[in-house]
Amino acid sequence: MIGLVDRERVDEELYDDFETAKAREKRLAKEARYQEIQAKNASGGKKVKEPSAPKGVKGRGEASFYRVTCKDNGKGMPHDDIPNMFGRVLSGTKYGLKQTRGKFGLGAKMALIWSKMSTGLPIEILSSMESQNYTSFCRLDIDIHRNIPHIHLHEKRDNKERWHGAEIQACHRGKLDNLPRM
Image (tube, rainbow, N blue to C red; front, top):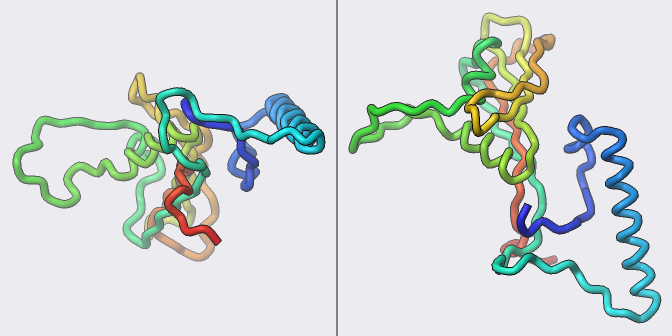
């Protein structure tokens, strides 16, 4: 990814299900070598330099990953429909000069696509309807080229609290350059 540099991972559980043991071992070895070189340069009196951004990329700031959660206590979604509701971007020709609220439903899909583009991580959806004694859990992302959902996990879980509604979690890449320093 353009402009992405090595950073210390704060929330390791973000990557638990998506990194194989071999890939994790390789990443940890690379991070250890990098820290060893940094320590060696610092102890030798050399100036330690942060990796620079590629040419043409200006003012990107320090990048971090954020997990954003949106939860409601509404009607919920049917278990079997969740992958198609989030994993397909539908289009139509009924769009005119007037747009009223709730007609297109692209907000969560755009969050999914942005998560896929910025981090490569899937989103997680938890939903339950009032009449159900289970919650539906789905972890998916979208195959952008074929416009179909790529389902990592889709299962039913116990709903002892009789909760109903929907909860969506997505991880996004962001900048820290506008935050106040402490």
